[in-house]
Image (cartoon, rainbow, N blue to C red; front, side, top):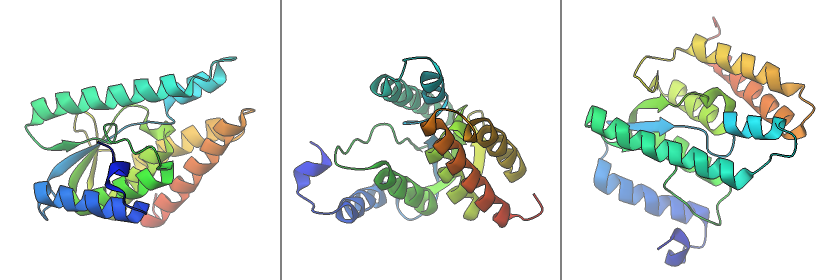
Length: 193
């Protein structure tokens, strides 16, 4: 059964239903881990765009989702904690912005720690998830639990955006510009960075 089987007319109504279900499971406390990893962008996307004629978006999407799901399963076993990952939810009518609105709101409401897969700095979704967690004082860590301080995230995002923003590939240049905007907003959180 998919979300569209419920005949909810708007994305907001669909989001509300999902949040009700999560509240049934998670309550009102922030105690779950959110696993952030590239889905539509990230290192595989960049490599695919840079390789002549290799732009298999569906293959990249499948590989990224499989990595997130497998990693979340391992993290659940290792930590014994509730781990929420974005790869298992598929709503065919949603845009990337619809997913981002859901996941960033989840982080704000229910998450005590966000763990990031390697290459997160090459993903606009992950960068936005980092930003939301930083704004709400939520722990931000590498997959192994080592913290990713704001200054470290800024360095990663600044380097990544600089390497992409002047790229001849328009989609990569756009990704670079979007990552640079997130870095600028993160600087506002702590102007000393």
